[in-house]
Image (cartoon, rainbow, N blue to C red; front, side, top):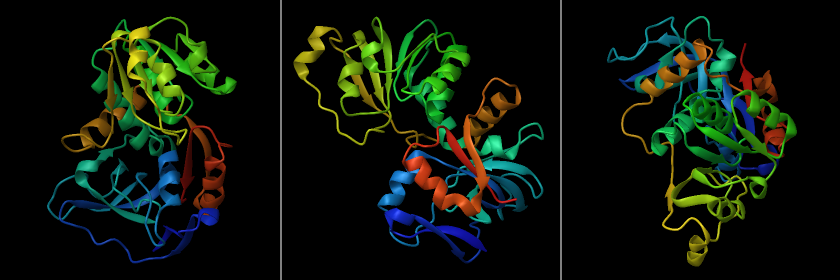
Length: 306
């Protein structure tokens, strides 16, 4: 089969080549891939990947072989999946516990943008606890995670202040329920019960300073690729006794399937709206990766194999 593999070269991070078809484990389903999405984190990982590595965590497609142990979706069912890797290919073996069935009402292209960003948003808010009536400051809101968090949190009754440098993305975040949209953390007014921080660098301590006493900052990314510096005495200027909590969406007990099914249900009910910045044929993946790296594409990029 054909697949995209890492080259180990930053200038051209993947190439399409022939590889062996996947060999299923007992609990794995063989999926013929219709579409996959690219996440910014995968671009960072490709920069340090050895040649031959097989990227790809977000896929949609058709089950062509059921799991040998009888678990998971049946042959012929449309699915969205979150494999550990190898999804940028014609076929991928996905653990049955990392798949959800797609109803006909949810197109493959829309669903391909769900897994990593959607799981992150869902679990981030679950980590934060009840957000009803709480004031939330969300940094790095222009990406896929930010859009999902904004829509889910606003629907749950939170007042979300979204930080994005893009006026266009800001308008969309307001449509999804953000109470306020600002260009930088320094423009955020008032104090917040909860900060969801994904940029690191200078923004993290600045966002922390906007917390109410005993508030919580959940740190779920470092898009700036710069480490943050915190001053113990800075907490006394406002966020006294605040908590800074590290978050990884993969730190989750149990399979992904239930959360994927929740995301699919919300999309099918028109309560969650994947933000897709670009849809292209997968032959153009190398060029799309460069555009994403250089921030010429906002939102998820979805590549199709049909």
